[in-house]
Amino acid sequence: KVLVAGSANLDFVVRAAHVPAPGETVLGRELQLFPGGKGANQAVAAARAGDAHVSMLLALGDDAFVAQLEAPLRDAGVDAHIVRVAGTASGSAFICIADDGENSITVAPGANLHLAPEHLPALQGFSHVLMQLEVPIASVQAYAQAARAANVKVVLNAAPAQALPRALLDCVDVLIVNEGELAALAGSTTQADVSGQCAAIGIPCIVVTLGACGAWLWRRDQALIEQPAFAVDVVDTTGAGDVFCGTLTALLAQGAAFEQAMRYATAASALACTKLGAQSGTPTRVELERFLAD
Ligand code: ADP
Image (cartoon, rainbow, N blue to C red; front, side, top):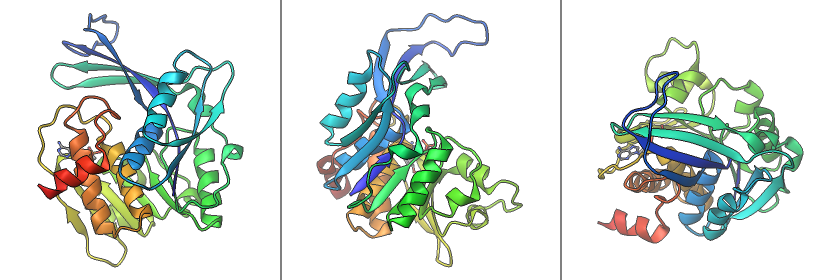
């Protein structure tokens, strides 16, 4: 059983000829709304990846968008523990995507910033807790410490990139980062290569996602495992990292070996790149098995 604790945002997406420069107004095309937020994206991916029983702890505001954030979680079969924050807007992201694929994103975290240490539900029955860094770091640390004390494995996707307190890192069993996040965590290390940077962080198991190059699994005192990416026709890579994290954790919670979990996560995130929107592109277990069998 997996508990995802993290953010939910509504993504307001406008496509335009180019991203506005400071002070500039650009006329875009039609507005599209997509449910997003790293936490919700990862919970949906974990639930679709199989029979892992996924719960999510999230905070929503009291605005008109609450239903649009709840529905996709419900549809995916996620058991949502929702903290209602009065007088606050739900998390939102304002995204402009240019025709050349460049984007500019402004996030209003809103209710996500109200997720507090005391909101953690009982951890009994959970094998894994999966978190990201779009909710207060003090809460992430408190949940990680509670999970460690309850013998629940902690999977942390350290995104968006930032330095982290040692007390949090010491509770992490599996760290998932992209190259930029890895560099931010490895900090002032003089090590330039991935293995050296991983060793400098001081966590025994680190997964580094490398976009179109796939992902690496680094474990202390073990050989590096390279999982190549699956070749697909890319439409939108938004949320690919989230699908990777949710799928990997779901497979680990189902007892899969790490190598197999990496293969499924890489396949699911490749499939997610073939559709627009973070959650709408997330494949189901059946679609995933079919893709892997081809
Ligand atoms: P993030 O979006 O968090 O920066 P990455 O860009 O590393 O994360 O992508 C996460 C995973 O998504 C990769 O490990 C890979 O498996 C998959 N992925 C991303 N881009 C592509 C691509 N162009 N083709 C195939 N798979 C991709």
